[in-house]
Every structure is written in C-alpha cells, then in structure tokens.
Image (cartoon, rainbow, N blue to C red):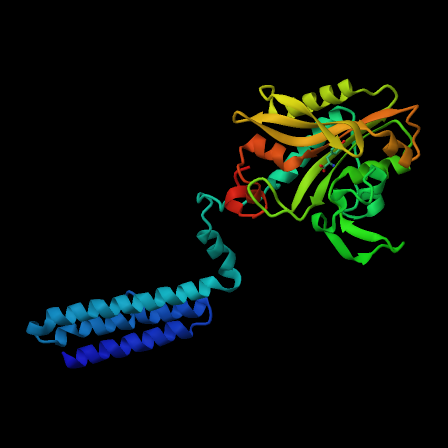
Length: 338
Ligand code: DAH
C-alpha cells in the first residue's frame, strides 16, 4: 500500500512538472498523452498496479488514486489556461470573458451649475426681447463703478469698508476695486456705442457682506440698459413684468416701490411674491441725465431705462432654494438636484 501511494505521489509530481514546463499547446498535448493517455498513459499504468495492494486496503488505495487523478487533471487544466492566456490564443480567451449581456457601467454625468443654467435662460429671455449681451471686467476703476454713475466721492456707497479695494493702483494711478455692481457695464457700453442701445450684462459683483441665508460677499447680477428716443417708465415696467413672468411663471406677482439710486431718476425697487412675502429682486429706473452726459449722450435727444437684478434671488425662487450659501458650497449632492 505504502509503495503504491509513493508511486502515485511521484507520478503527480512529475506530471505537474511536465505540464508546467510545456511551452506551447503541442508540448502540453504530448505531456497529456504521456500521463493521462487512456491506453498507455502513466497514470493508467499505476492504476493497474492497484491489484498488488491487499484487498483490505484496496478501497483506501482507490480513493487515493482518484484524488491524485483529480490533482493531475487540475494541473493540466491550469497549464491549458496559462497557454490560452497569452500569444495567439489571447483574443479567443478575451472574447470568452466578455459578456455582452451584462449591463454597462453608468457614467456619472456632470451638469451646469444652477447659476450658470439661470444665466443661460435669462440671456435667452432677454435675447427674445431684443437685448444683446455685453461683458465688463470684474476689476474696475472708480470712474466706471462710481463717478460716471453719478456717485460722488462723499457718497456712503464709496466707503472703503463697503467695497473690496485692491492694494494696487491702475495704469493711471487711480484706485482699483472689485466691482460692487454691474452698472459699470452700462458706462462701458455707452462710452463705446452711440444710441440706441439695448444690452444686458450678467456677471459677478463683490461686497464685504457677512454670509447669511440671503447675503454672500460675491453674487451675480443682471444689468439691463435701453436707451432710445421716447423711452418711458411704462416701457421699463412692462418689460420687467414680462421678463419675470417668462422666467418664473404667470402666477408670480411683482410690485414696484419708489426708491433712490444716484444713476436713475426716478428710481424703483422691484419685488416678487414668494410664500406670501414680497422679496426684492432688483433696482431700476430711468437713466439719470447726468449719466447720459457723462458718456457723451444728449439727454435732450434720448432717454433710457436701466435695471440691475439679483440672479441668485431669481434662481432661488425658481428652484425653491432657501439659503444662498448652498449655491456656493459646491456640495454635489445639493447641486445634483438642479
Ligand atoms: N446697481 C444697483 C445695485 O447694485 C442696482 C440697480 C439699480 C441697477 C437701478 C440699475 C438701476 O441699473 O437702474 O444695487
């Protein structure tokens, strides 16, 4: 019995070594015939010697034989797989592993930030009302941010504590600041274009406010400017109403309150209704003659209206967002929803 088992183990070791050493499928096949061949295979030869084992021990020997046979067949299968995996057989194997019926891996698509989406939509609405888009710089000089807009040096809006003045000066030695309003772009457009004009400008503005649910030190405005002959306050009111209804829907109420801005006369603030409250979404008015003069227009020939709206407020009302800070935390779990 012990001798039989020893022979089995020797056979297993040399068969495994032969399969492992096979360099190609032809070599493996001849090793297979040598060891596992049905008639003259070496396993067969050892199997025949089971008759020499005593009758008592024969069942145990048979069991051992089967176990060794399985091991040798396993070594053969492993060698077969190894040779299949490389060389010319590779494509067939890869094809076997690719299951076209499995579901694909879903890509995680990103999308535009809700503010960017809002900006695109506002441009679309205003474009249909005949307004084209103008751009202006976020770093401004005092002429465009204040002076030309009829905001004199002593005006509280120019307080350094209410603005982000930069520690550098402009090419002309004048102070520079992050613009506090997009009204700057009105001036830049009128300086370079004779009337009539009909433009909007959308972009960031900066004020040193402490962030809370409705304030953030950086936010977006949409500025609008229309200058032509015979422009009246009625044009402004109907245009703003048409705009708000286009963006927020016909069930939204808006109202105008008398107000003051240095660059408009008269001036209004505009509110929309939201959850039984009036929420201010911007200021507007008829362009002050001093502003028209500052850019070289003749206030006797042309009049105009202007407005500056808070883009976050519009976006928040549209999507029912309660806290402006959520828009800028950039938590994708939040942004994902819009
Ligand atoms: N620039 C003003 C602000 O930031 C908003 C504004 C009011 C813009 C009246 C205008 C306007 O063009 O006519 O508060």
